[in-house]
Image (cartoon, rainbow, N blue to C red; front, side, top):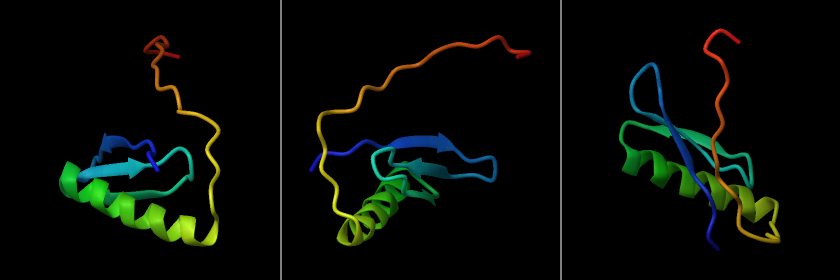
Length: 68
C-alpha cells in the first residue's frame, strides 16, 4: 500500500512526519528516522483500523498574505 508522508522541520530540531490518510504523526532527528517512525506508527494504526483507499491523494500548495 502506498501512502503519503508530509515532513516539516521541527522548531526543536529534527522533523515532524504526518500521514494524511490515517492522521498518524510522529517525529525523528533525520528525514530517514522520521519516515521510519511514521511507517511503524502507521502500520500499528492500520492493524486496528484497516483503510480502503479510493485513489491517490493530490498534494498541492497555495499562498496567503504574510499578515493574514
